[in-house]
Amino acid sequence: MVSNIDLDFYSLVREAVHKRWDPIGFCSYSEEMGEYDGYLPNLCKLLKEGGSEEQVFNFLWVAETDSMGLSGDKQATREFSKWLIDLTHQKRFS
Image (tube, rainbow, N blue to C red; front, side, top):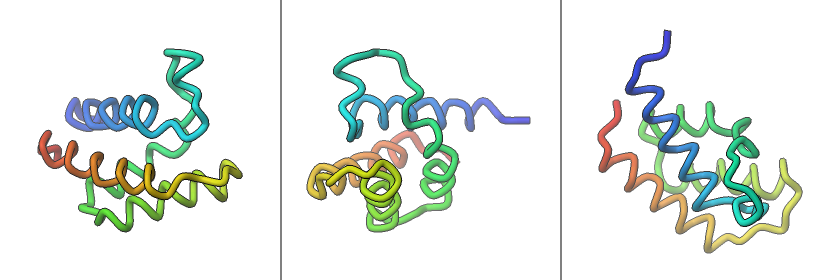
C-alpha cells in the first residue's frame, strides 16, 4: 500500500515535471498530465534516496535526449534539476 506521503510526493514531482520541465512542450497545449508518467517512478525513487543534482540531471537528460529523441536543453534541464531537488527538500518528504 502506498502512503499519503508517497502519493503527495509523487503528485508534487508529477506536477513539476509536467509544468516546469516539459521538454516536449506538451503543457502549452494541454493541462492534462500523463505524458511523462513513465519516468516518474524512477525519478521519485532517485529523489527520495537523496540523489545529487548531477544524478537527477543525468536521469532527466537521458530521458530527454535518448528516450524522447530530443536535442535537449542542457541549461534548462540543469536548472530544473536543481529546482526540483530544492523543492523536494523544502517539502521534507521521507
